Length: 123
Image (cartoon, rainbow, N blue to C red; front, top):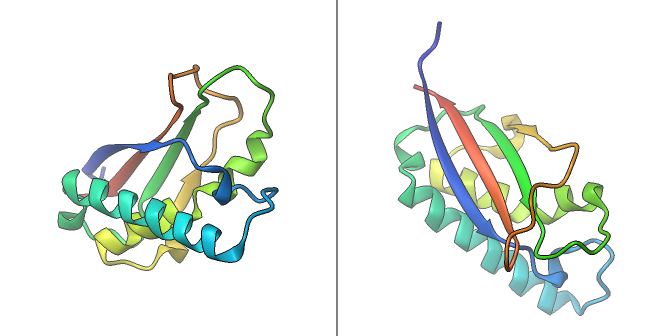
């Protein structure tokens, strides 16, 4: 049996510019993507993921909306591309081999909203 290391990253709720259906200027979208990617990068470093360069980690997502409004759960996956890229940057690996586990239901409501990403790597 393989030993593993797990780290939990709590990302902020994605800004509207990260949503597929948002009608925003390309420069605003690019800024939001860069910012979200940078947050994920810094949080991954803080969680010591840079010390575990597994090329195929498991990323398990939990989405905690800021309120009970109706949302499309499937659109959340696209908002997380920048976070996945930031984690890959911190680990210095190519994200094409990442295994992502997407939730089937929404998590509990959290004030301000949050995305919890649990990263499991082989030690």
